[in-house]
Image (cartoon, rainbow, N blue to C red; front, side, top):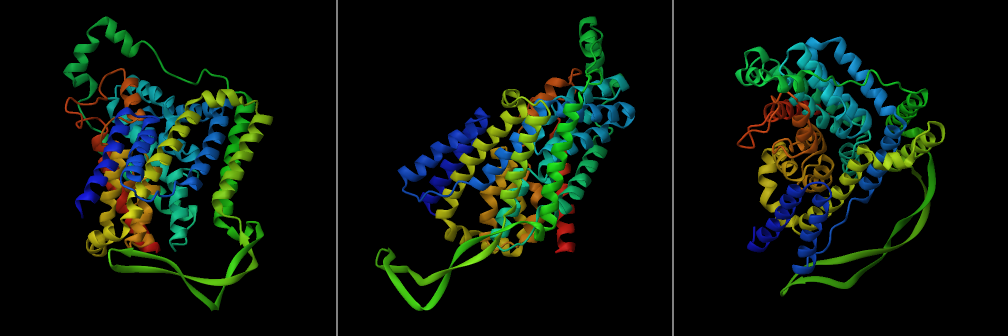
Length: 481
């Protein structure tokens, strides 16, 4: 690895690190500074921004945001609360399951903010240390991203894998990721079940509630959505959204049902070879020559790609909710689901473009450096996915930025599917909005970001969940493929 490569890699990592410190839109925007330095400063050829994935995110987030504006999200949260309050003694196991499946349905973990205060309230009322369910529930809200049929990470994995010869569908991915991640979550919940001192034995907590003001703050209010009346239009919006998901899964499973259209493609003519004068030279060494084949074109039937299917179905569902379910577009744009989704679009746009620019220019060198390790231990790419995720706070961006590199190194598709849960590592440094919000929602003060930053309430459940999920997914993928 040359000094120039190292310097440019430091620019990439520095842009990601600075962007993650500012958060929100800065992650994608500051990646633009790194991109500018590589392109204008070092003369690297720009990579390709992941436009297909971005279009899918926009469509899915618009649909989910419209459903939230209609009140449909309130109905989902209300049903989850009923389940949790019916079994308060099992809150440590049920809380992560509810946040997980909400994310699976909607494709973003930012829908759980309303549920987090309820989880804390139920734990307090039952005398359970809130850190136990809250910590693993926050982890579960992000783990569900690799299990959602409309999440960018899943769609990008399928699209990039198909391009690289691994013929796989969205249901194929979910068949591996959902059981694997559920195993990881249950392992994390089991480890959290007796975590920390019980509230009646915790001296810090007992000292806190000895103060009448603090006691009133902790126990005085009760977070709930059960008193909210949900109109039928909101429920209809949920049905439309679930119907859209069903249509997407149907077409993903039965692709023969997809429409096709006529399009042109080139037909090679072996009798018309010619070599371009555009020869690439390094010093006096001829390194390659571009050989083209003249030919004609022909019409053929092309099946509608799944990325187009998802976009069309999601946008159509959003329109139906606006027309028939009293969903306000202005309210949707102001809602947290749409806003967080657009932040993700900017992040993936900047990060993936920056990463593709660097790696595409040094693909040969990367293969030489990593081929030996990857050939002997292909599963080791999981550590790369995890470390990159720690830096960039986006599972979709990790997939878009790193999966093409993994395929170019010769790692087989089933191996990459097996290590897909490892793209979630941004709990490691507790600066993600869901983790920070969970700390603030816990009125007992037991869910914390520690004095030394890394000794926080999300570290243990996060590591256990990702480690277990990756092992289970790797085993399942090895058995099936």
